[in-house]
Length: 253
Image (cartoon, rainbow, N blue to C red; front, top):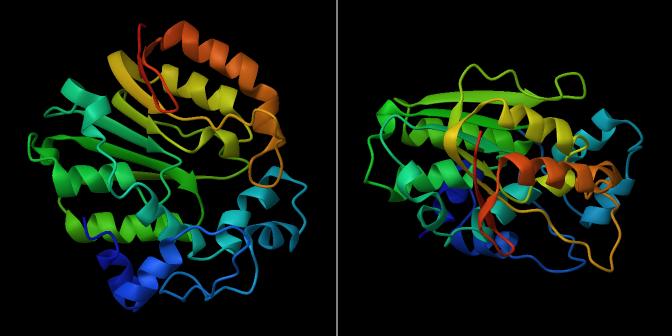
């Protein structure tokens, strides 16, 4: 999969630059290009970006994802470029499915559906995408609408005041990967998703285990504090069908 192509088009960079900026290295301070939706940023590592402004309120913490410009766009496009989502969602990938990608970032799951899954008629499906205001969300809007302007994309932009989306439909598929550790309110998010789940809805999720570590920076302490009750709620309504670091859950109602 040529994951760098959209980056080259949107950020006017060559393939080599896109690949270099998409590789994760500890402590690096790369320079990321500007776009129609964000300025160029660079000269800091992630920790320095976090510390460059007050991060006391929930909104200040959410604003971090605007402050880092295109950093996460390049990283996310590369990170799951070879991931087979079909392995986890299976028969729920069907005509007429209602899908939510929560904490979508660059929307790797929905983009994968558009580029890889010819088994279903996507024009019959509904797609909800949820994230905070960020360059990743702007990039997701651009590339999804570029590739499939005919599809129904419902974007929800989370703020401190709009803490959980007001969905208008129930879901057959929920993708919430690499997200929980960054949420200030994981319990409320899960409770909201449960209330909008169809019978046998598949949820594929990850939650970074900081065994021996400690929450901090964008891995929010608020998330860590709510983890026990949130996982208890998940397990009561969404028993695990397939475990490991990536967990597939089936809604039991």
